[in-house]
Length: 212
Ligand code: DC
Image 1 (tube, protein in one colour):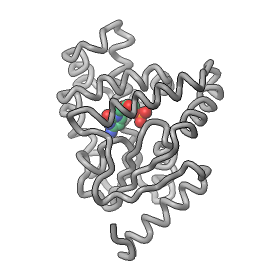
Image 2 (spheres, helix red, strand yellow; image 1 turned 90 degrees about the horizontal axis):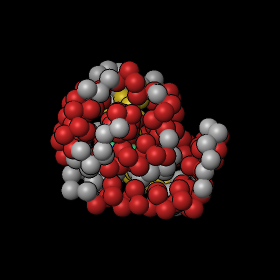
Image 3 (cartoon, protein in one colour; image 1 turned 45 degrees about the vertical axis):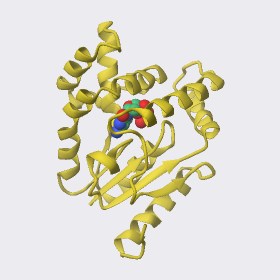
């Protein structure tokens, strides 16, 4: 089974996807980490984020072993990832890796922006996670503080809104729910509540009880 979890920045989709993968015994791919790794490679080399050819080269050279690097988690890298992910050729280069990951047994949970629409349009279950921007900014601020980073909540909110706008308005694979995705609003749910709501959706789909 392939489970596609999409949603905007800091919506909680990553934690949800990880928990679902553990629950079902599936593999998990945080596809945002792929774009973050490309952005991080450019930043570390001092390359310009506007240099599309350098971004494509970094995407070609992506080492999946590096996707757990904690340096990828920072807010700065997330914003840079949003910039490099708008390059069509960067997305093209990274497509097969994601599709292959999804296809390998025993099943997979992928989270990102375009899993249900582009990477795995035939996913068995698609969930689009949303949450109020203020709630997302609050969560990101707490996460950054927990990592020991200084965090300015108002700046993080502004950045989240700008990032959503860029991800939604790009020409290729923009952030949007697939037509057959279930919306999960986790503004007022804690992690456990979100996981339960998602499992309810997945089980209902599996039992053939749920129509979009
Ligand atoms: O989910 P995240 O914050 O780690 O994602 C970082 C950026 O990567 C996001 O702003 C846009 C891009 N991204 C993408 O374009 N497509 C995906 N499937 C995942 C992330």
